[in-house]
Image (tube, rainbow, N blue to C red; front, side):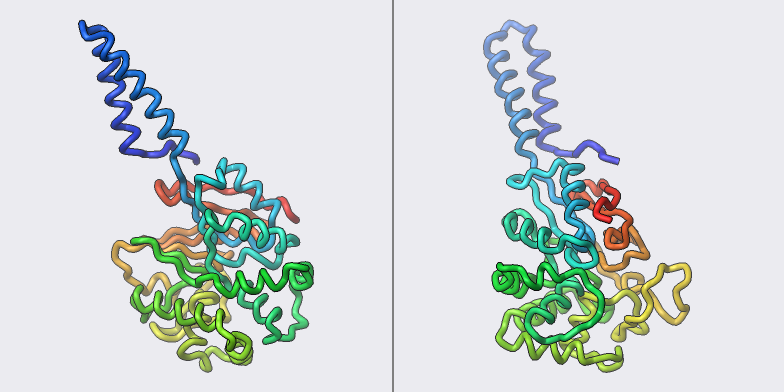
Length: 310
């Protein structure tokens, strides 16, 4: 499904080359040969330098699968860019390798935090003692643990690039995009502050959805939401697909209207790759042994590779 890129500049040069080639037969042969050569090498340069941006779904500690995807994309670390939609750690066996690779290439790889990164931060900061199953042991005991904590605390929960919005789970239906951006910044500041431990401790102490409000509701919406009871109340219990969803619940993206904005999210493995209007889910169940997805942001070509970590 890898379609050729559309590039108006390249197409323009092609037209100019065609025109120049036709002129080579004219009496101005020498001048036109020079023009032809300049244009020919110009298009080669543009093709070589062309940068791509890919949006990547939930990697979930599957480093080998991630590397397989990068090979499929023919990813050039110093030219192309990746935007990873959170949950790049846990479930899979190689979370530490994932984080180290992203940090090493952070000038070209951007991430938003998902619920698994929030979970890991809470453990590393001492805000949460858990006996639940996870695959973060190597990460939690890494010699560069302090550096990783600092790095995670500085990551955003939402990225906005013009009309493109990138978030792990979703945007609360009652929010405007501006409000969502503001809430994401508030949470990011809390996670980066000296009060991060107490903030996360309080957040994980809230066991019922009805207890969520303010910043706790914002964090849950950005990192855990799938379904909504109303425009300002989320449901965190249902994790299945749309076919069998309770009738009193609605997918968050089906009760929003964001105009021309495109919103890219992950978190919902039961959906797989899913497109509804201008909303795109990129979680294709890599953490459950299925596949890892990437979408070319320019022409929306989908790339997928099978999980090779399990």
